[in-house]
Image 1 (cartoon, rainbow, N blue to C red):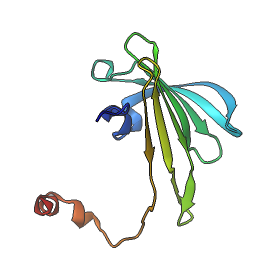
Image 2: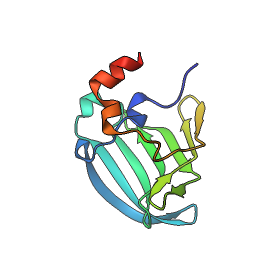
Image 3: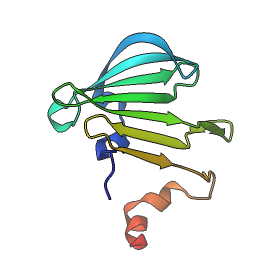
Length: 134
């Protein structure tokens, strides 16, 4: 079973790993958005030359991302929807859909039953604790 999501798409997106360029303001799905291009600083280790992102101006939530391959062709589009606010501060989406325009395939991820404040602490995620889980 495969997926149109690459590891790079779902891994941590540290701000310092990219350079940014504001392109325009635009309405997308009735939301006022910034449209911003992201360029990976480490081009040779990225599968993409750039990402074009629609960012909701009000809450800074990502609504859409277009990914461009090494030939600078539009490879994939990610759409994220169903945002809900939990505990009056955590925005979480319930749906992410990735469409690969080059092979015609898509993958949809659906989240539900988010849980917060479950009693876990930072100590639950140190090396020793994680080794015990095996």
